[in-house]
Amino acid sequence: MTTGPEALPPPGLEQRLAAVRDRIGSVSGDPGSVRIVAVTKGFGVDAVQAALALGLVDIGENYADELVDKADAPTSVGAPEWPAAPVWHYLGAVQRNKVPRLAPVVDWWQGLGRIEEGRAIATRRPGATVLVQVDVAGLPGRGGCPPDRVAELVTALRDEDLDVAGLMAVGRPGPPDEARPGFVLVSTLADSLDLPVRSMGMSDDFEVAVAEGSTMVRLGRVLFGDRPPRR
Image 1: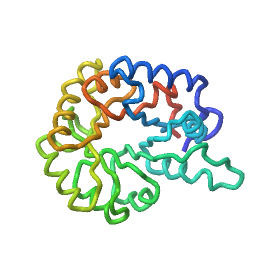
Image 2 (image 1 turned 90 degrees about the vertical axis):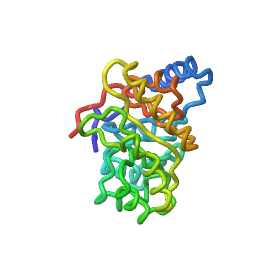
Image 3 (image 1 turned 60 degrees about the vertical axis):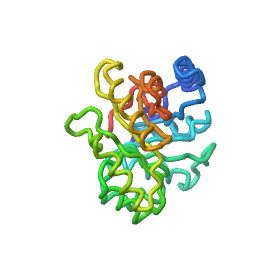
């Protein structure tokens, strides 16, 4: 996990958050209509502390070790307690060998693309809340479930005693509007499966995602600035 002065969150988080909420409100009509997951990967525990102090209780991490280290931070001798209880979202690829460490900590597993991943989670955390990642870009290394297999995977995960709350997607790279067809597809699939949560949109394309029905956005750079180099 990143440590040292470079790990501190940049100043102005409160103003950045207010601007983000205004941008969400300008699209949805209600700044509070979309759940914001503050993605603190690459930053230190100070970033989590700052987010929680501003009411951003949903904290997202892409790396298993970094999430576990941050979740354990308040147990260190002399460490401050969290200003509020964090809700940890794991955003990275689910590797079965890391599930045992993550399972006691993670509240939301975003990005499930295969039944094997779900089974590994269900073994360690029955009833866990999960989102199925829909592959809307078709690009190598992106992960996710092909759209025509999503309904089948949702059913299989529910059979494993998992709480499938909704769908998740990473928009196609490029100009924000190029992500729109993928977001439309995810919202349509979620409607057809009666799934309330649509985790769509990141720093570059969250307004497009909100316009197309996102209920949850995953924001890092637009809140915290550029990440320091990972060590």
